[in-house]
Image 1: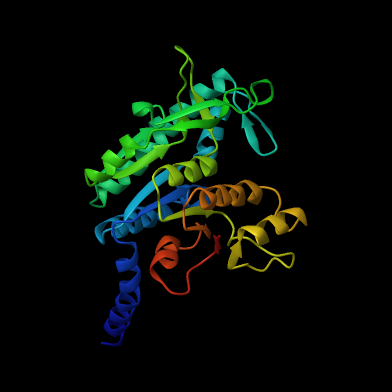
Image 2: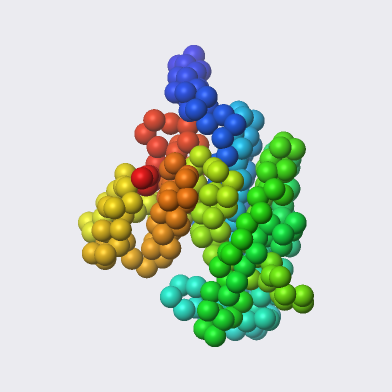
Length: 283
């Protein structure tokens, strides 16, 4: 009986958040450890299904760096990074698209379908959803940045009652061009703005933004975040994530969250509980 009462209390706590975010688009950048652990993959899929069933409109933007690295190594194709971003040669671009669009994307779609929610996987090339330009072709090759987003294809998937699962590959207006490898964090940010999402969440391999004592900072605004970048508190791989958060907020998204994908049900803890998890950044 006591366990059942705890379940009821949990449901009651979640109810205001279910009401608040019903019919709202929530963009989720899915990567890191949550994408490599079989158990966490299953939990992520179930969490997305639950959010969808209670009326929210989750949109998944995924990475796949570890899987890309493994296949490149298996094929004995070299890969290099500059400032944390992959240098994408034409040969590497083929592998990136193969892994992201053909392997990772379809695995996520299959997991969601198996747990009872219709999902449709696309890349930015489909329907002209994402158009890219080179970030710096001389130094980064086919690593790109998004120049244009046409949200209609994703909105149509949502209106059809499905969960969009997006591989961050952008197309080009040049015939025969292989396309562009887009940083998944930045893609999630731009997509959240284009879709007029209520929230954007980034699943990472850390608890969130940490201070100089390695303690979690639970709440930030843009000014405080910029100050922490300037004084070196935010550095390394966290910089592009907070930059993606700031870009989303300035584009009209109300809140951006950096949460620990290694924590079981981190999505539900953030969206459906009063205490939340990780770092919330807002205007």
